[in-house]
Image (cartoon, rainbow, N blue to C red):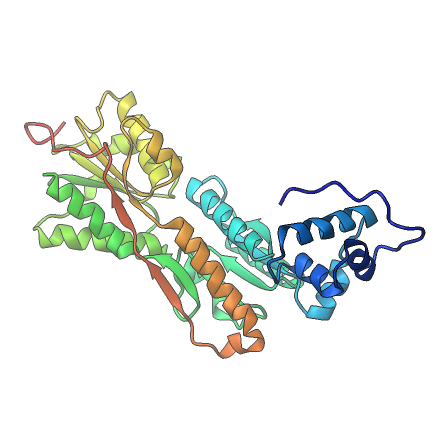
Length: 352
């Protein structure tokens, strides 16, 4: 809502209280409360009058007293592994917007894939009395927060945790979609640029991918598999897949940033995408749509994942102490194959 110009007259000695804001705006104090807490839809003219009165009196909410009274801080912590991976940045932006619409402030913490740093962020958010925490953990076996009774509601997203509330893509289905598309395009020599299999969402993508290959009597050769962190460096190693014949005619990268990095390295080495080598990614980050041709990828429904995670967390918060005994909910969101321009039939002769 656009801020209106403040009224010109406040009256002598008028203090900045919610009652005086209401008096100046010509409304009831409860109306001002609804405006501040976004608990009711006000008529535009009424909202404008309240806004003018707030500006004129320079009224500010005492958030400390408000939090003590309501036993809520209206703040949510989000812990993600890094901000360099575009998918996490996009997801954080989506979550912030959803929380803003619900009158929550988001506190962003970045673990940099360090379990100790992740645990420290978690403890700090609890000490700051956030109402709840959303977390994309590093590795499940190292995530001690998942194995303890948390003092605040905790929801995991992107990567599910056994026995804990979580929201993630159906990564197994996503891996299947990628394999089926490459096979239906005629590829038989397929390579993998794989993130760490110890991370559950990567493991599920690989399981779905390999199960489809096996049903077609195919497998990824050891020399056609590279593992590492899901970052630019892994993609830049794609040349290692072409050291021995038979060369792969297609490459599946377990996230888009790896696929894009691999694309750049393939072009540098003189390969054409998709003329010589087809390439498929996973995530559908914004950058993938602006390549020439655009990247074929398995799209995670990031807006829905962010929205579902916030809704699940807010529901747990509203249950107050009941969340400790609540049965954990796992929301699994179906991905979709985005067929674009980076996958084509293998070159004649079967390899680049």
